[in-house]
Length: 173
Image 1: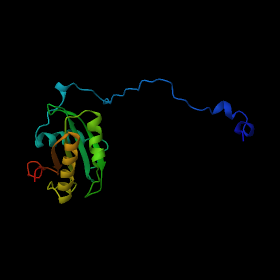
Image 2 (image 1 turned 30 degrees about the vertical axis):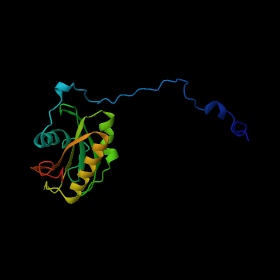
Image 3 (image 1 turned 45 degrees about the vertical axis):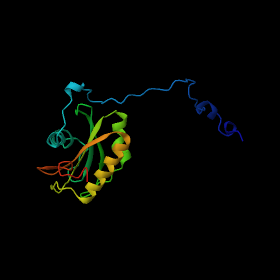
Image 4 (image 1 turned 120 degrees about the horizontal axis):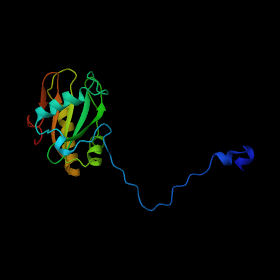
């Protein structure tokens, strides 16, 4: 049955879409919308203290950050351990956040990050890692090893203090 016979003028409005016959693929580049700093301008982030300072300066003040829920963030670092950017991966509940390696490493791969620092907050204010924090960290370290992306640390931010899972010895046990 011909639909143009039922609805006159439909053939003029709705036409089949064809992709152009261009054999060359398109190239895309991920660019920060607000600013594109050069490597000299990027913030050095090679200690848990500097990562926590970065959190307080940039993540805790972001419009999508919710201090009443656990928020999981990935800091993307270049070879000189300078921050290329960060990604708020997931916002959870008051005592849990769900993450998957696919989301954690996606932007790190796209932006060609050399290493990452995992971070999340505990709304209770206590920065002591839970058993699930330790397990997830170890799983993400193994995933990073497969991708050749180094997980430098997992920093848990409390109200006035922070905890580094690397410094606490949970990375190589």
